[in-house]
Image (cartoon, rainbow, N blue to C red; front, side):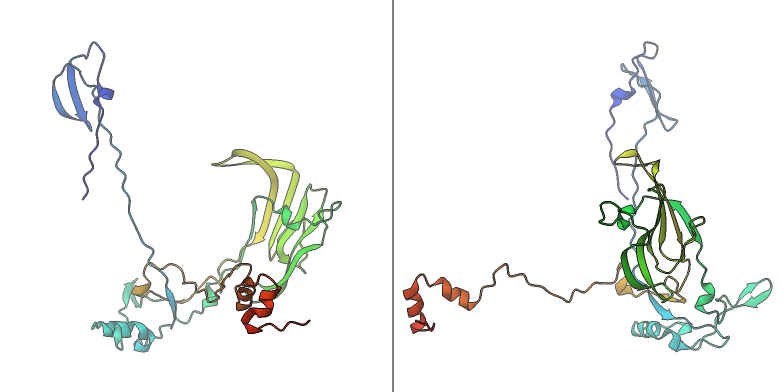
Length: 310
């Protein structure tokens, strides 16, 4: 428990009205706290004090996956929880599931059914197909601008191109380019799109990458806390969401170890160490030459260390 003490300036609550002058009334949260006669006379008013309540919470930390094994109706194999069993055994603890243990069924609609996942259901049964999404956003027209002073936006000219894999492991050529340009009103372009995909400009439905349509002749107003309300070019965005797939879904037991509590990211190890010695590294030869100021010093240095060709 913490005790908060606040100072209240009573001048804000003093009545200067002649009718109430000399009357002292002090109400706290609607209940009369004191009542008497005073030369100042306080207004009938409750005192409100703001109390800020805060709470500190920590992320439970990184969880690691343990391979999921479907329940087949037989007693659980202790090997399925080998890591947990070892940990509990070392702590001198023992629980029923650490041996050959059968889950206790629950009663559901007068039928005894174990409270478990659907047995033998593979991970891909939980996947959902992506849906097409459209929105208004800021333009990214600079990413498809060429260095040509006359024709800055060249249709079907790849400003960048690289071979990448999609989330299913399929290889394709990712490109950033203008698809069509109607004097910038609108200009259609794609960022990270498939080089071989033909996009219907009437009803854009790109399967990969982000499709943009920017109207430089039309504006809409947006606002933020710094600049307030200001106009920007109207830009439509079309792309296909990935939904649930093998890259963002897991069918496994989420296990946390106590030494990882509060650790929210995997540690990064920097194994490459670069030492910057400045523009000129000091070697022995440099130090020797620093001691030589004329030709005689060069001839006599180290009793003939340097071979002088005359």
